[in-house]
Image 1 (spheres, helix red, strand yellow):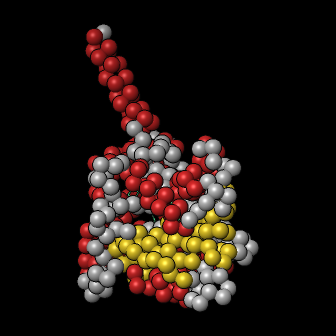
Image 2 (tube, rainbow, N blue to C red):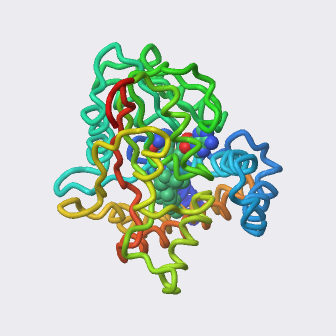
Image 3 (cartoon, rainbow, N blue to C red):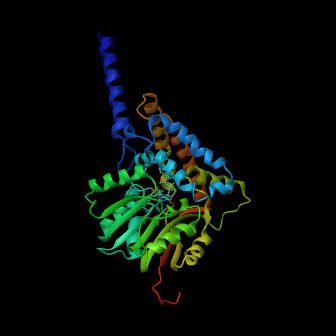
Length: 362
Ligand SMILES: C=C(CC[C@@H](C)[C@H]1CC[C@H]2C3=CC[C@H]4[C@H](C)[C@@H](O)CC[C@]4(C)[C@H]3CC[C@]12C)C(C)C
Ligand SMILES: C[S@@+](CC[C@H](N)C(=O)[O-])C[C@H]1O[C@@H](n2cnc3c(N)ncnc32)[C@H](O)[C@@H]1O
């Protein structure tokens, strides 16, 4: 009798710990998702593993296919179906890095990095601002709330559109924030439709930066400002150093990038499509604290998350394939950290541009 009671107590404690582990202890700072809710975007459960294999097969294709504008958006869409829920669960609603700020939380650092956009593009109440590659809308909500502007976000991924709209409603910002599903290489907006625009760690997915910058230029009003936080290799990157190459290839493969650009190419492209370049700066440079700290400090969390997704897959709560996607992200985090530590990569090369007014001498 006593041993039965003991067994029941052990079972009850185990169940309570498991419940706490899965349902309560969400790892996201702004919990958008719990582990038990992990889906894989709009991919049906039985197709997740196939889609994951399809994602990897893209990198085995010849380089010309990899860089073609026709194939990349579909490949990026597949990637975001696979990772969006894991990002939300493990990172929050803003899919980007920020300089770490001494004494401040990651959440504060993220918001401050987003709100910097408001000052840079001079977003004002009543303005119509475009968010190019908006994810599930973390930045859009911060920017709309801070500036009083109306923000329109565009993303290639239908699943993200649904998530972003749901978050907007929950935050009471659905009147100020609108989300459109579409390709930023051919945007469904008229010429001169926006008073300002920004892109946060999104245009790195474009096979040719000219194409997306030219589209942004087209939809901006003359005199309007555009700021972008770009993923680039820095001047310290050496194509002949195997350690450098391994980190950069690792970043490209784990983040659906057709090929990273170098820091010195960005302003040149902006000028080529007609922009006046106002300022260009790597926001990761000192005094900014290392953006990769947040990835490093999470080693224990990764281990916990790995066990969690494995258990949820065995219990068939999460679809098969989630463990592989999670492992891919773990590897990616390692490469991003190495890229940051070696100083050969930055995810926050800031470029501030202005569309000239006719008659400006530019
Ligand atoms: C801008 C892009 C995405 C940048 C980051 C938001 C994501 C890059 C790598 C991601 C992650 C890596 C490790 C994951 C971890 C193994 C898991 O347990 C929890 C989620 C991670 C921390 C995940 C979160 C998002 C990233 C940091 C690219 C795509 C252009
Ligand atoms: C890393 S996420 C960043 C999201 C958001 N800016 C943030 O910081 O939270 C990149 C975003 O770019 C979008 N994207 C990539 N290629 C795109 C394309 N061709 N057209 C539209 N959106 C695209 C993705 O769907 C995703 O929403």
